Length: 114
Length: 116
Image (cartoon, rainbow over all chains, first blue to last red; front, side, top):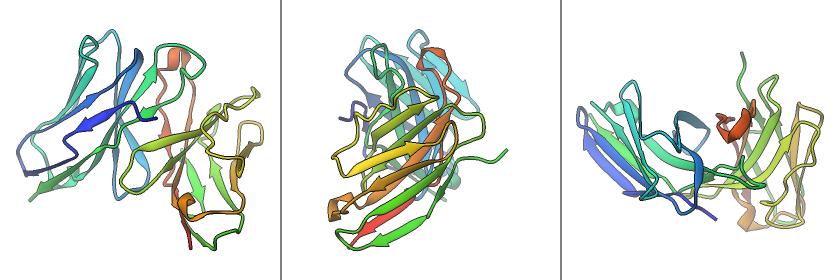
């Protein structure tokens, strides 16, 4: 089953604008990760935020995590055409036999128009 | 060093045939994962290998699916008697499996399987 649910499903913005994608999940997590996928092939890990962290930055990326609302957001600032891709959130559960499994959402398809 | 590699990159087969997909993980990574991604969907977990432990096969959708891994190296995913609903991209990932589940998984480029 897919725990993470991203919204919006698709987002189209002009180059230079900021892009915000949201992710909601259902169960207690150890960490939440964001991945990027170009052209439906391999995924690239962007950033990992642990359950005891609230915000994390990496370059033009800013991720927030609100465990009380079971939600996360990914902000890409000053977007570029090269940021065009699908973005997925994935959660790792807090405990149990499957505590290594990544559970992915369906993704947000971002289009950055030059 | 080299990333995760998968072969073939594309596979077209006829319904009822068996297929074998290969994954070469990053050297030294003890954990290996297989996922399936249907068109427009997120990734579905299939199977997980960690060192010499028994694999977690809980995500395999049917007994037509099986996977093996030789030590901490190559893994093969086999689909027997393929069906059209097996058409998807099959992604492999490996990780160094840090404690507490906070490891980063490195993905291969995937194998796009099309069952006619």
